[in-house]
Length: 86
Image (cartoon, rainbow, N blue to C red; front, top):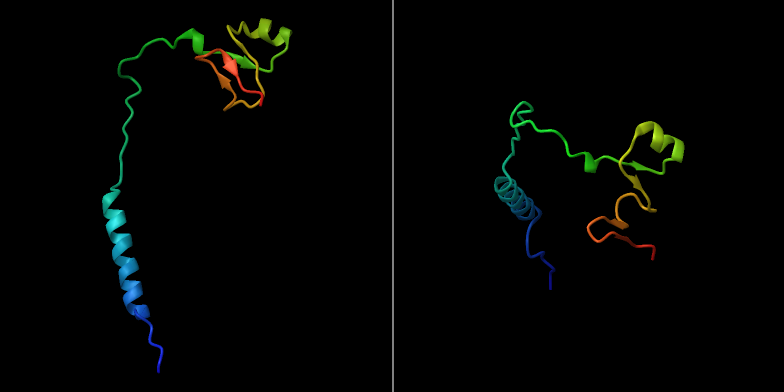
């Protein structure tokens, strides 16, 4: 009895090439245009703040917010005014 592979390497390469082509066709290139002069408004001062500042730095910068917390990106939940220290 002779063992024969179910699919030849050429067939496998053709199948992978077809799959890549289909996946690429489903994700067309995206172009984003930003008009920096359109609809200009002042930035809300409530979004400015400082993390890990000293009292002197806060006074010097006139910062409206001093952020506390450990991990700068994931622990603080500003909407609930809570943070996770677990």
